[in-house]
Image 1: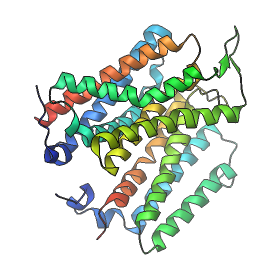
Image 2: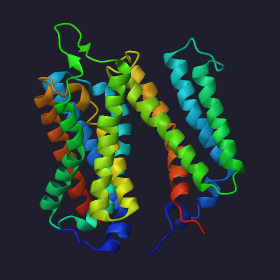
Image 3: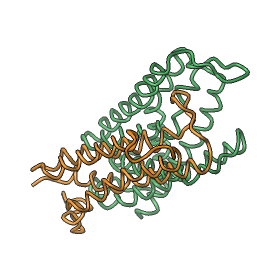
Image 4: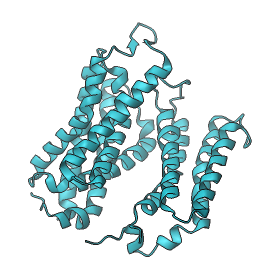
Amino acid sequence: MTIKNTVDGQTRTGSTSALVAGVMGGICGLLTFLMIHALWITPIWFILPFGLLVAGSGGLAVGWAYMEISVRLPERVWSRALVFMTLIWLALLPSLALAELRRPMFTLLEADPVLNMSVPEAAMRFILELLVSTAVAGGLIGWWLGRTRRAAFATALAGFIFALGPGHNIPFIGGTPGVGKELAIMFAIISVSSLVLVAGHARLAA
Amino acid sequence: MDRTNFVQRRGWAGWLVKPPVVAVLVALSWLGEVLHNAVELPQLTLLSPENFLPGLVSVLLFLIWWRAPAKRTPAAVLFVWGAIHLVFGAILSVLPLPILPFAPEQTPGHYLSHLVYGLAQLPLLVVMALSTWQPQN
């Protein structure tokens, strides 16, 4: 299946379907996260209704970003999904790199983890090195691909929400042995949500 | 290219951004927080700073929006106010983040109160977003 790359198709006729597909992708990403969490860590199904709010609104933002840059993505669904996944990883890359390069926020002891810095410093790292850096990286990707302020804003918002949702533990887990598990979970969420978004959009817009 | 947005195409623009409607949306946004506080922090009253100050800010922002001749900037500010409630109040403050000055209870009831708090922000966010980004004549 392919998706026609026309400016008009991208900005108008495909808009509602991209937003709906974004919400579907967000919800599928949430279900993937909850399933893996239940099997690998501990069941937290009780967060599902709240998670639907975050995943639904986040999916809406990601769907909008997808719509804004859609005209620059490949036409084949699988290639398009692969490129979109890569773009999400690119947006998250600065925060992942910062989390790994900086000293860990915590020392993991047998009891509770001990914070290695003051709470304000940790909070600033959370805001600047996760939320802001991902939003800026997302915005730059949107500007690079969409060449409009709207595309830059949409992708910045999507990056911010992606950092807030699936990525909110990046600065806390960085530099600890939990990084592998975190990356594996994020890989599953990003892959499933991107594929559902792209395939869902292709079906809805057909 | 068609420059009208969702609201305009359906002729809802005038109705959705009438002052009484926006007043209700702003009140709903504040009530979301008040309801959360009533459930999770029952010792607070309506005059406690945690309830009163956000209410005061909401009233001020609404009055500025209402009296301003150009609505775009005040609408954007109201949008940001709703987004702050959603992101920091409803979402971040329930996650088990070690940087919070408190340990949010990880229970279904607590998540439900944050869900209601978050949902209460959505109507204001949607209307203010559409109002902010509609083309100005």
